[in-house]
Length: 460
Image (spheres, rainbow, N blue to C red):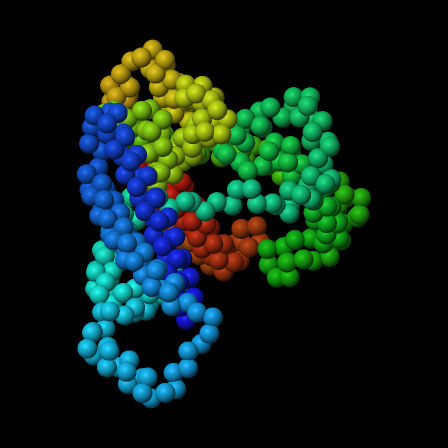
């Protein structure tokens, strides 16, 4: 039907115009940067953009040519084509004048994720349209593969049920503590780790967790008042001690469990900030080298941070740099102020020094490229020293591992075999149970060493 074909052509024309607009804008941006900085940024990208735009414009022209004929074919009645003489007449005209004089419907699927597209064009333009369609798809795919940046999927902003429940019970109390200035240190630590919880919500979660741990401690205390715990089966055995004696022995549980939980949650942001700071320190030498190379091309300082943020190699440093861009683009700060504010909440001392030094260099009008180059050499020298220190530490722990995990269990097993043959038992534990305990200890020690080496191993 002519009306449906016209609609499909117009939809495809709109899509081609949209793609042409995007590629033309990107091409103009590159040309403007080159004219301002008098440098060649990326010749390959410009060639791909020009070729893609030219192929899209040719397709646009072919679709535009088919519009008048499609409009002429629109009518308010349906032609009856039951007459055999009429069908023979159509076949005769097609045979004499050729199919190129008529409109043809073409169906294709540009990619796996997009729906099938149907357009109606002139028969004589079919080959030309398909050739340029293939070319434009090839150029666009190369542009996406080489230069596109996927937007990261983040769960930031999603509501937490646990946080909502905590705020329901303890929000007012947390806000009072915040207004009195008791949560300043916790607030700084949360900002350093880019926590999605504000300090008031996190404090409410701490109080709510403490409340839950009090109930858990009460249940554990109630169980220990009436049962003893044994290493052998049965594990729980009814106690023979008096009720008051059991309370005196185990009343501390209801105090220790909430205290430990509160301490873990309160100091977790500080510990995580130190962990992130250590990872940033490992990335920083390579980040500074990358920044120095970018600065050599003569781009503006803000563009240096934009390029680093788009890179996926520096997982932790790019989050700090993204905060700089947010302060500039969303809050309206200038680059120097954004650098100083970000340095104040940086989890890495070395990154803080770098940001403050960059701000000073920009303010004083010094050469940013020379400064970054010299700073990169200093950071890389420190990085090599840390790698050597890690190697020596690994050798030391290897010796400890051999002594504790290999030699000690063998000596203990021999000792307990001798004790078992003489009828002596250590704390009433049989050699079989002692052997099982030693095996479990070896397993836990191996897991502990693996976790420790994994955590202390540099990422770069």
